[in-house]
Length: 137
Image (cartoon, rainbow, N blue to C red; front, side):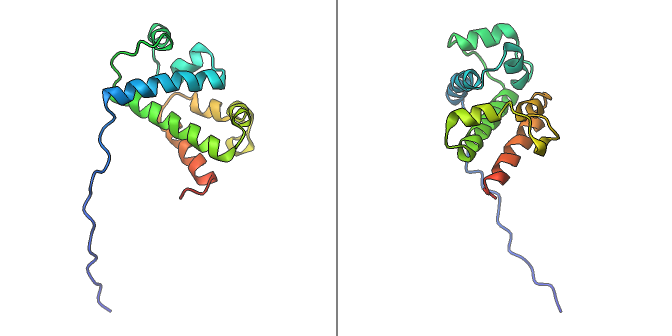
């Protein structure tokens, strides 16, 4: 039996980098999401990669400055997490409560505990877990 060559599909980047305008919208949405999750200032800053309390305070006032690539990705993952939770729980308040509830899938930790480990990869793992739970794959 001879192996046949496989036609490869060239990489085609269909989505552009998150623009500054989009990053501003993400920041405003993140403030609203964290209010719904009832996060502390420290929790919010940790999820945003160690954002300073002063910068977080400015964001809450609607004054979003420069947003770097890491922060854009963190916010994009947070929106994906929010979307995944909304798919699992049709009642938004149940989803907001789930974020902080102990979960056997996470060894008794909450989803928030997992995300608060502080790494970008922790947000990515949570997003992937939620996508798998809602059978997106």
